[in-house]
Structure formats: structure tokens, C-alpha cells
Length: 459
Image (cartoon, rainbow, N blue to C red; front, side):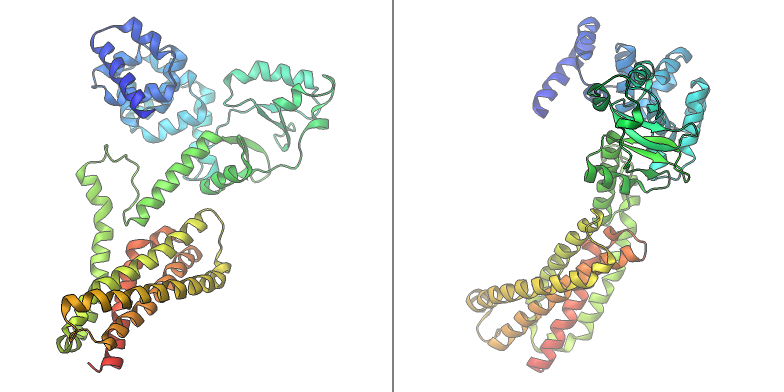
């Protein structure tokens, strides 16, 4: 599919170069707005306004929403007042609010100047809500019905108002003070026994809704759990203020997953895509964690230094340090990633800490014994042949295998407990991912290794 689109994209760009505008326009009107927006990524700056003006008004507005912010800004700078107003008139309120949030001040001023008073008021209302809240991602464009309306009156109202609404399938039933009392779907209306039945007789009253202050991640989880097309948003007095649609919830899921992946990889989150980020941007996002992890790794060096005598007396111990540290880091990462993912899906709470610990301890014992057995055979059959039988005695082999067992146990306990503790303290659990866990486990595995060597080998 991707290869096919790439071929089509090259053909369309060639038409633009050859100035076959009529043919190009005929093809563009058959395409999805997201795919059309993707074409603009391959254009030079001077070609973007030309290509955009080939699009019909409605398709142009839908494509504009899907475009990258830098291309949107470029177009707005080149729009005439009439062109800007035409695009804004076709935008949904939540898309217009997102546009205002991403544009520089001079562009925002021009957008608000040409938006109609109702849209300007709605944009300002959405922008007042905290970032990452349900209020900040909702739209105020929804269909509201009254309880005492008949089915016939409701359908007539949908026909009159639905053109400008983001979704008409789910309609919300409110009182005169906008208090939410129920919902009804278009399917319910079409399949009603009679056109004279009142809405309150067929509406659903057991409602699931969120408030304007609900975290957007929680909103996204509710969409995943209940398979909603839209979710009503109310204020503190249960008055309807807007809806969150599934496309916005999917955007939140993508953003949150991207943020978690970046944090787990020891980077501060970035709003730019990789190709749009400069080397300086990447440097700023990566260097803080690299500095922290480098400094924290000092403890590993301190432990090795403090056991120099043991290493001097039995140098072969050094050969097994990388294996022990890597195995411990990998074991801890497995547990931390599993717990972090469960926390993000709301499958775990801090109260489950002891259940998680008990499960991970049993898993660690099974993994540790298996790894130790494999290690014992490897050292016996491979390492002793390579390094010499005299240098690796059975007691040295036993110390390595015993350390491996304990290291896996420590790594899995640390890996599963730190994300839960972070969540309890109000931090993002993703912070306690692979790099951080690995640094801690490296130090602990070395400490255990040298203590066992000192006790059992007398070095």
C-alpha cells in the first residue's frame, strides 16, 4: 500500500511540475484529505500555495487540518483575507483551536481577526482549559436535543444543524440550562416505532461522561474501553460544554505512546517529528538524561575500584562482569516495561505492589535458575577451554552462577517496584524505564558479585 501511494505521489508531483493543473485537480478531489496533506511534504515552498489553490473549498479545509504546522503557517502568511476566512469557516472549532495553539503570535492574531465571533468565542473557551485536559481537546460543535421533542422534530433539527457539527450520529439530550440528561443515536430515531414518540422515552439515561478537567489520557482509555464514537464533556454542575470525538482520542493515544517511548529511551519528549528536528533540538532532548546516567554510573566505577584487590588476586573475575551487568539490565528492563505498560492501560495500581512483587519473584527464580544452569554449562564447556582450566575453577563458576541468580532476582524486583513507586509519587512511570533501571542494577550486580567472591573465594 505504501509503495503504491509513493508511485501515485511521484506521478502527481510530476503533473504539478508539468503544469497539468486540470488533470491534477481531477485526481486530487478523489483522494482522502490525509493523503493529499502528505503530498505537500514533498513540495518546495513556492509550490505549496499553488497546489493548495487547486483544491475545492471543502477539501482544502479538510486537507489544511491534516498538514504539518510549518506548511499551515506558510499558507496563512500567503492567504488573502478572503481565502483565510473561507478556510476558517470550513474548520471545526477544535481544529481551529489546535491551529491557534501551534501558530506564532502574529499568525494567531490574523486568524482570530478573520474568525466569526461565535468561533472566536469557542476557541477562547477551549484555550482556557489546562493542557492535556478533556476541555482542551473537545469540540463545542455537537447536536443537542430536548427531552420533550418528538422523533420527527429531532430528525428535523438534525437536518438543520447537522451540517456544521462534527458528528451527528450521537445526539445529546439536555435541559434548557444545558444539563445533560441522556443521549440518543440516529439509529434510535430512525428505528423508533412512531414519529410522535418523545425523545425521553427512547433516550439512554445511564451516561458515561467526563469533566473538562479530566486528563486526556484517561479520556483516551475510556474510548478504548467502551468503543465510543464520541464522549460528552460536562462542567462541575453537569452542564454540557462539548464532546471529544474518537479521532481526537486516537491523536491523544498516539501522542501519549510517543511520549512514553521517548521517556523510556531516556529523552525528554519532543513535539517535532524526527525529520523536522534539527541536531540542536535532538541534542537538547538527549543530553540531560545522558549527563544524569553518566554521573550515576560513577557508582559502578566506585564499586570496581573498591574491589581492586579481589580483581588483582583473581583477574578472571573481570571476564564475567559484562555478562552479569547485561543480564541484570535486561531482566530489569523486562519487568519495568511490563509494569509501565500495565500502568498506562490502568491495569495496575500501587495497591497491587505486593502481588506484583510476589509474581516477579517467582518469575525471577525460574529465570535465574535457567540462566545459571546455562551459564554453568557454558563456562564449563567453552570458557574453561578458551581461558584455561586452571584459571576458572568450579568454585569460580559457582560464584558466577550464584551471582547471576541473585542479580536476576534483584533486577526484577527493582524493575517492577520503581514504576509503581513513581506513579504513587506523581511521576511518569516511564521515567523508571530501561536506562535508569540498568544503571541501578549494574551497581547492585557488581556489589553482589564481589561480595560472593570475597566470601566464597577468599579474595
